[in-house]
Length: 169
Image (cartoon, rainbow, N blue to C red; front, side, top):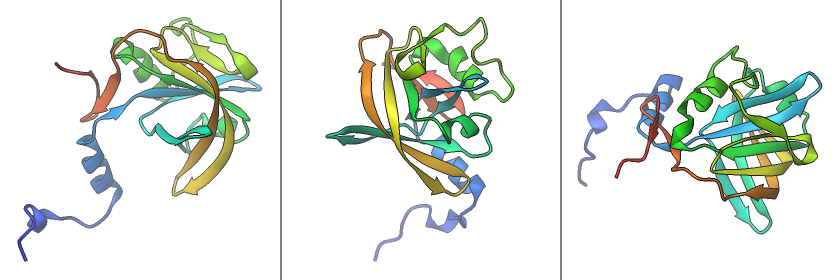
């Protein structure tokens, strides 16, 4: 049996361990939006994943302590926006607690099913929520894609080492 490099530095599971490991994992950046009675809500997500091609489905995680959760918990539809590297500030705005996410600095319009659709993103989709699965202090939302537009321009925005970054050639 060969030794695993670094095994001597293994730590027990903890929130800090999980955060430390995922700081080393580059993830695409998306903004999830929904329409609520008091106006639109949205948050930055790095957990977006493709689930199924037939039917087209995706998933994302949302914290139950976040300000967007009460609306996401009851919304039938959500908007999913893939951000470009030119949208670091937009990603930061939707990630910041207490920010005016749909204020004058955010270009958006009401889209299909009343979902807020952000302008200038490389790609967006409107989805029907089909499941909300409990997962610790989060919920995994599974949604079926109804329509979208993948024709926007820009290279993808990534989240790595606690910062928003662009791709390097």
